[in-house]
Length: 475
Ligand SMILES: [Zn+2]
Image 1 (cartoon, rainbow, N blue to C red):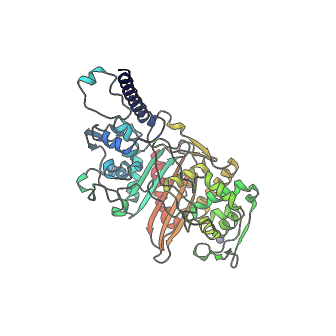
Image 2 (tube, protein in one colour):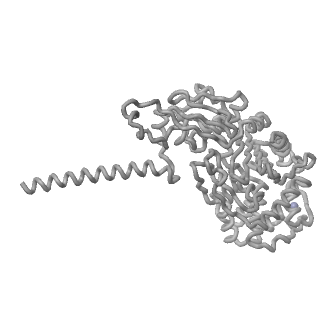
Image 3 (cartoon, rainbow, N blue to C red):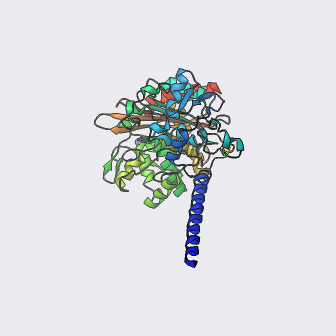
């Protein structure tokens, strides 16, 4: 008899243990998200299958889209504005492996009621209500998004990002081509029901977040900031750009179009984008100093952002070895060097915000003006670069988007990357930082798939000017 009793007690213990483990698991499953961990994709799929999505607003409370029934959204904007937002919002999360790069993916826990507690009201037990997720407000300005889209929609492969460098808020993120989000039937799905991510120059994907590009000369200010922080005396560094002085290690690297810039100091080296200057100055650093700096700027160190924000990581060396050749090529944004457009914008934001880099905010929360910040360079270094970047736009390679006549101070940098020397394929860039109290924005224009006649200053610059005019006149 005694044996039987113990036996039964044993079973009770096992049962209790199972209940406890189950309870702890459930607790962590729920609590996990509030600790900033990711919610499992399968759970989100389940929620999306039982909840009607909430409403998505832009920063001015314009309705972008709202759930009308489970699995069905209704889109609220006019044609151009909706097209401008489509690949930022993303295809339904069940149709893409890239959902974490979209609003639908990042906002999914809110939109599909993950944070709702349905069992505080006893009526919910007896009479289950229709499950409707929470509303979400983005930092995106749909009107700005639409204007930018109209400016670049005829390019075959182009992106523009606008961020507020003092708050980290993302105001616009346009990626063309895009797709018609209202026409779900038209989605190109494979046999597993997943979108073809490369379809039509990645039309379903917002390439500001989910792609990386060869940066060309736009990487130089970042690299020179690292050099200046490691060796403040380099502020007086001088390089003589002339024939016979362009060999580094056993590589000869000319300046753009074989030009010779003669005597270059920091300001002129950046203003005229002298390759020799950037390489020679960055070679003044030790490899350890460079790598320490790259890490601080989150180059070659995949950054994890809070609140489910995701973008591809930028890299200086890429998968290439840390050799002198790759270092020289990386110093002018060629070779294995690749940047994500959002991240490059954010790095420039740090230069314009005196060395402070803000984490991104795409979905508004109560403390969104207080996003995490990192000091990436000293204020002294940032100020020196600001001065040089202003001279780029006022009297250098960025003159095509100068706004002096309009009374606006702009600092910036252009870039021309030779993606494929055989075909002449280029990616061209223009970056602008608006140095006005009420518009602390960084704007980045990236045009991919360009030909060998294109350059940052002459091709991306005029596009930047159009974009800046629209932003400035709209304020
Ligand atoms: Zn030069």
